Length: 84
Image (cartoon, rainbow, N blue to C red; front, top):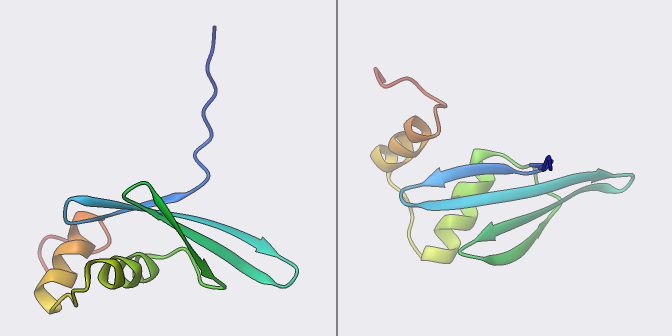
């Protein structure tokens, strides 16, 4: 039996946590939902980007990432080079 899986979301890693962003375009705009720690959070009309993942992670963890931490998160998600 063949199992077909559909991954229809973006996953970003922020330190040891995964942030999954589900986003869909509608006539009226974008609808985005974040899944963090098995809990879903409706974000509304925002894009499914690393910036959105960072903002929701910061809000849920009540922590603001500093410049070095932001660079680390971008490196871990392969969005900037290790050389930077």
